[in-house]
Image 1 (cartoon, protein in one colour):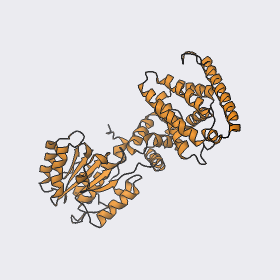
Image 2 (spheres, rainbow, N blue to C red):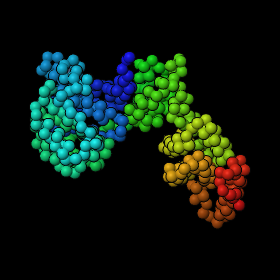
Image 3 (cartoon, rainbow, N blue to C red):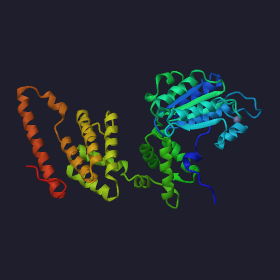
Image 4 (cartoon, rainbow, N blue to C red):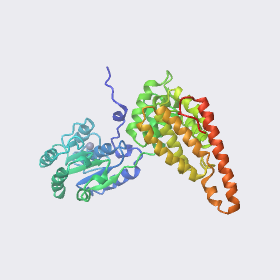
Length: 403
Ligand SMILES: [Zn+2]
């Protein structure tokens, strides 16, 4: 039986050129290696899943490669054939040590690292310590580490990785060359997923790739993990459709979400509730619907100029955004997320039916005041009618009628 390797491991980049969506980082590292200006400590920071540990391993490979002749200096393009490169590929390099600071935070744990640093490397030219989640180290552990960082042995290199750079003491930071890994752009991630799927013998539809990238929020690891699950649900023709991904993620398609948001913004409460019930009946999770609605509104606010939501007033959209934030808390605390979702839709649609705040602010002259009052009264009447209409269609979802 063939040994199964998860996609994120199978496609883990081995050289700087293979890093996804980290062009600036790759260029800086290449220049640092090619000019042989190699610091004692590197620090990689960025959100989870963007490739910090992967980059640390690639860097270790570059620092340790001795070339086919056994004499090559540090390089930005490791040979892949020397003993050091082969040991790296097998995760068995005796001079490269990985240490997870999240599970080993104490001063005694870090002392082990410091003690090991005293010994000379066996295979490569350096002993390399990759310390993941370095921000988790205790204060005393940082102090112990600092002593070694201040006067490191010439054969030692540290590579730190963290998601929370602000938690790292300034004294440590000032001794590291710092690199930020950016979240991988949705386009780069989508293209990469289509490519990986093809290598695995699947056709990943572009819309499906986009949905995965959106869900993964810039994390390559998360994206590959979703793709991996999707390959198990693919049809006989090995095609992965957007619908497969939507079902897998317990959500609704981006088209459905945009349609629902537009019904809310147009204050079409009844239609919006019918649509949300329909999506839930198809198996969509209320949490995911809510989260996706929020994402759609966010994107609408950000690219409002010329975007799909251009016809709505920005101040109203921002006001709805506040309501979303508030309702998110309600949803988290509720045992009935379905009801919270529908109630939130009523509130949002009701708010969207208010007259444009910007226009109201212009009406300051006395003769306009009456017009404003009339407009308000009409809006209030409309919303009462809407809510009562909704209550008739969905009895039991809200306690009593609006008078
Ligand atoms: Zn090599």
